[in-house]
Length: 576
Image 1 (tube, rainbow, N blue to C red):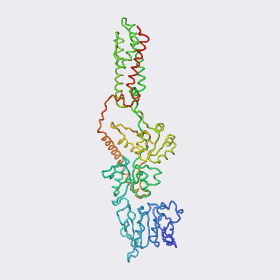
Image 2: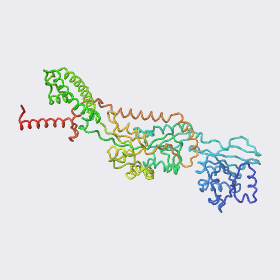
Image 3: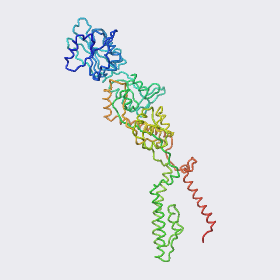
Image 4: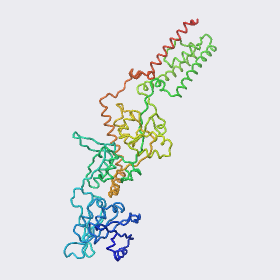
């Protein structure tokens, strides 16, 4: 790029064309105030915006004219931030500071100012100046990199080194908030916050590898993710972490590192209430076992009567069992009743021995299973699929903000669209968890956050979870750290993140933090006695609903049946 006044005869253009690399020459415009500007931006092609290097020749325009070109917005909006910028100026003192020390060039690492030397007698000598990036504690950011005499470098310094592989111990601002297990915030007695968590450890590795000090703080006004986005858009933060999903909407406003993990966006739902005690009395056996048991009692009773009758005909002198006694013997073994009369023939005795053995096994298995069922309330199947969630009576589903709503509304899956019509945004994840615990909501978040929430806050003293994460998730999301758009240090961060992931540290940190959360949750419950004792409360809990008093209900039905049989016998008279 060269001003028209400095290339009126095309000498510069002809000289540049002799270089081996292809060049695109652009004539800079000049204003009456002496400020340079890019030509009409509509004439800039994508090739201009993606150039690997820009040579700005402004020998006569002065450093202020070049500074005007840099800060006017043309360079920021239309030229590549990773390109190499070479400014060629006159012998003006302080030209490098004027051109490089500003907010635009502070985010462009590859830039040098080549100016004529202003030293007396330095004929044919040029100075090459460069600058430091992100050095808040350094007063002077420009430095003399090399001198050229008669076209030969004196120091042989590298003009475009990787300035961002070492930040020189500068303190850089990071933004985050309490969002376990990725971010775990703790405060001391003075209210000072300290942070731990998988993503905090990842940022600390970045700080150690690239030599900068990380200063973490929460986003202003408690706006959580949106507060971090706003700080990044205005470049008031250096890096942000809060389990950010890599989405098209996010990449429109910020840059993101390479993903360090993939997490599913899942729903957490309330567990269904335990089955009533009346159902619990029949639940030790499955429906198939109950059917086989009833059928075997009926058939076995008939076979007992048949065996007794057959024995009477083959062995005279022995009384046979009546059908009433056969029913009493057949069904009595399932109730633990004793026999009022022992059969006298051997055939009936042998059959009855095997029948008693069968009944003993049956009753022992049932009683053992019943004790377990009454001790531990029976759970109902939880919600595990999106279809089950859509058919459940839960009135609302959703998350923080409306990002997920947009994705659900544009889905072609009718089940997801049905859930989108029940979407309701919440202000914080904690609010969504409270509503979920009240059976009014199903919160959607990444699986690790939900697992940590259950382990730390929604597990009772017996180690049982009170909320449930669906097995089927909405989508799988890539998770990354965020930084301002057009961040020049993104390649350096990506390199470190890639090495951390390949070393398996992310998975190790996640397991370690989740284990600590479970320990803290269990320690908080240690004051109580975790042992369970079968008491009367298991048979008759405080809830006055009759459906929870199965044992007493069956006992009452038995008493009423006996009373009814007695009344009928008195009414019709006892048979002789």
